[in-house]
Image (cartoon, rainbow, N blue to C red; front, side, top):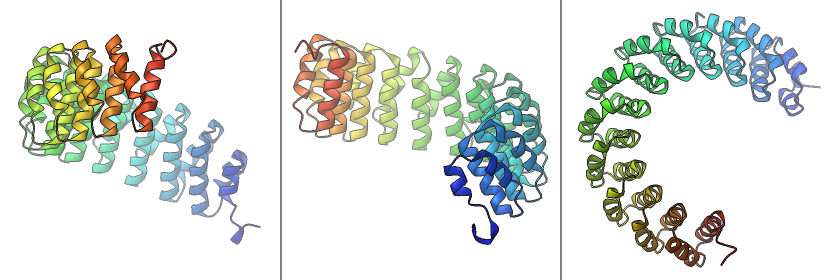
Length: 359
């Protein structure tokens, strides 16, 4: 018999006893009700949606939070109306959980209630509402989110920026480029990431200027963003960023150059294959594979002798993407590498291009 009369939630979960767990949602102990809600969220049975929605009116705020989060994990649109009502709960943690859950469900009916929640008194709730709107990706949220870029709280502004990036509406480009001049580096980084998601060419020049930002994490985000925008103007600034003092920025620049697909970046990436950072060398090898230019074969063949097994593995994968006969010869040599992972990658790549049987 369960101790103190409490049901054994763990055993119910193991048996996937949905009916038993639903019954436990009415247990007199708040802890049991909350744990039952969590267990139901892991099982994800839609028959639990209605009883969990009813639990959003529980007298205990922790139980209401658990119910909201559980409904989000189940992800069924039947809960949208009840969660939208929970956005007006007296407790901020419940409102936050409801907003996050609505973001998981992604039902367009939640857009207007979430827009209203962007004016919540709690910073945490406003942030959750912004992120939820980004998940839903409804154009109705664009103008309210642009207005939220002026929120007094930096975390809310960051969330609004990222949400606009997720929605990918070009109306946000101007306001987001203005955020690249924010005093807060976290906000500048979020703006760069969002502009990369949108991918509009109007952001190229402001982002190129931001490659000189004093903060390395902002420069990294800018390099990544430029790599997502298809414009020849990004190439030379990214080539220059291969010499950045921070290795994370150099790595991001190398990967971004690979996204351009332009053969003119082979030479600077060749220099990056000699970088002191293993991560940068690995990124350069990966980028050369994406470009697919046969001129990179000798460079990647040399990288197969790198002291780092990670770089050798990346070089093998890159040679496979190029697929030239000379690349195949180098991959066959890699089958004798001292590291089993490199050998496995080389054999896998050869098999994919149909040459392992011939040799």
